[in-house]
Structure formats: C-alpha cells, structure tokens
Length: 381
Image (cartoon, rainbow, N blue to C red; front, top):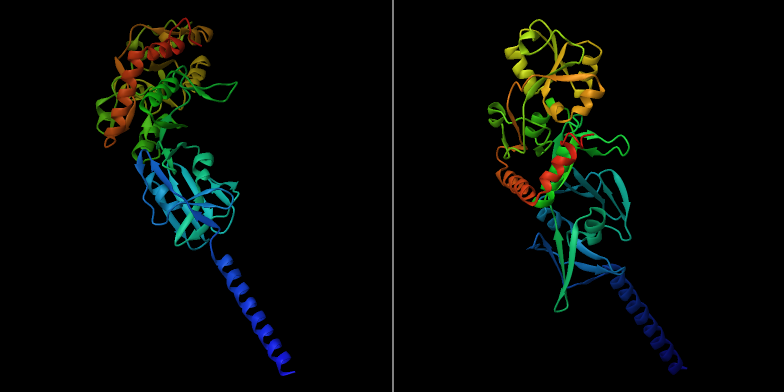
C-alpha cells in the first residue's frame, strides 16, 4: 500500500514538472519575436545604412528593417507620436504614418494594407522593406555575396518644379489627357533624366512662383521666365535655354496702333508679375490691365476690352494661334530676353546638375528635337 502511495506521489510530481516545462516553453514561444536574424545589408545611394537593431526576416519571409535609420539616410524627418502610437516620416511632400501593432501604413493619407504588423523590437520600429520599394516606388537592386543579402536602394530626392501651366506652347494642359505638356515640360523632363533627378511639376500662378521658391514650397522654376538683374538677386538661373523678347499683339483690324508710340492713352493687357508688366509700368503712358493667364488677356483683346497685349514673342514663333484668332504682332521686338531655369541662391549643387543636363541634351540633339516639336512654326499646335 505504501508503495502504491509513493508511486502516486512520483506520478503527480512528474505531472507537475511536465506542466511547468510546458508553461515555460509556451512563455518562450509567446515572448520570442516571430523573426530570425538575417545577414542583410542596406545601402542608400551606395552608402551603407548602420543599424542598432539588425534587419530580420519574419515568418512570412518579409525582410524587416528598422524604420528610422533607413528613412534618416534618405534625408527624411522621422519621429514617434505618443498621442496616437505611430511612427512617422516626412520629406518632399511624402508623409508616412505607421500605426504600431497594425498591419497597415498610411502614405500621404492613403491607407496601404501590409501582410505583417508594424512592431517595435528592442526599441526599433520594424517595417517590411517592401513598403519602401513597392509602395514608395524607389528603385532597389538585390545582390548576394558570400551568402549575404545586399539591398541597394537608389533614392533620388524629389525636386518640385513650379510652372504656370497656362502659357502654350511652353506649358499648358492637354485637353484630351489632362497632362502637363509643352516645350518647358519636355525640356525639364529631359534635363531631369540626364541629371538623374526625380521631379514633380506643380501648377502655380506666375506671380506666386518666386515666393514659392523662396519659402521652399518648390525647388525649381521653369515657366518661360526671363533672366533679369532683379531676379538674379534672389535666385540663381541656369544658362539661357531660349532667346526671346517682348512684342505688341493687336487685333488684325486695328489700324490705329502701329507701334509702341501709339499705345499712349490706350488700355494695354499684361500678365501679372511678368517683365512685360514691369516695363509697361515704367515706359507706357496708358492704362494697364493685369491678367492671370495668356488666354484671359487674349480673350479681353479679342472682345476689345483692351487695345493691345504686350507679351513674350512666342506668338511670332507660333503664328497659328494668332491667325486663327484674327490677331497679329506689330513691328520688331521691344526687348531682347533670355529664358532660364531658376533655383534658390544656395542650391548651387542643384544648379550645376541642371546646367549639366541642359548641356548634354543640347549636345545630343534632344534639345533641337524638343524645339522643333513645340516652337517650329510648321509644327506648332
């Protein structure tokens, strides 16, 4: 009997040990992150990114990388918000919000579903590398060396280009596609390709382009903008990309205005913030009306609300617009102008890239192709 009792006690003790072992194993499984160490290295523009917590691979095969160091290497501002338990990154109009513990990311207000949760491991917010390469569309090259996985992220900072998209054939909106098109648009895209720049074009009224550049809303201006001594005091220009000048446009049936001397006492249209407005204010003894776009000024001229329109002589190049609207250009140019691409005074590196890109497309013949497409009278639209 004593032997049976002793055996029962040993069995009970063994059961308790087994329960204890299983409990400990369960806790280990629960407390151990579902990730494994991975021999992964990340490079941004060929420069290695250094991590406090190394990249890992989760159970779904996602390469998980620390959020802060990768985005900091791309020049982004990175912060953690205690208010809503999110990790954030912001740069060049890009804002990423990562709710901790959820399988989603919010990119510029758009919710993106992920196949893994955003987790904090050893103080590092871990995100799938695919969030960078797929969702944010950065080029990545994957290499394997001695069993190690090397991820090369080709990150090009976004350059925001401002242009008043109301000035054909330099820049305007294609009525069929809704896209920005024109000489300046093709030109800046070709320059950006040669200079390896990632650009975004924003439609901004001409009189707000310089303020937008100075307050960092945009980084570059291309908008048939004349290089002037006054403008060169507040921003840098590239080498001229187009030679032009101001001219007087009137209705074809107008026989009272043959040149600038007949503008005295007349009502003259100009585009606000342009060189034409500045010169007209200084030189003409007449009434000026400022318009926001060329189309508005031309409509006023055709309806006889104004007697003449002073503007860049692109109309002499693109005579189709004038002929179809019973308009004509008078005499010779009032001025000789050079158009340039503008950047902030301190952005000398960006200016160098723009000049180099412009030089290369001129030497390759691409500039001539763009010119003939938009500014050759035979091809003008």
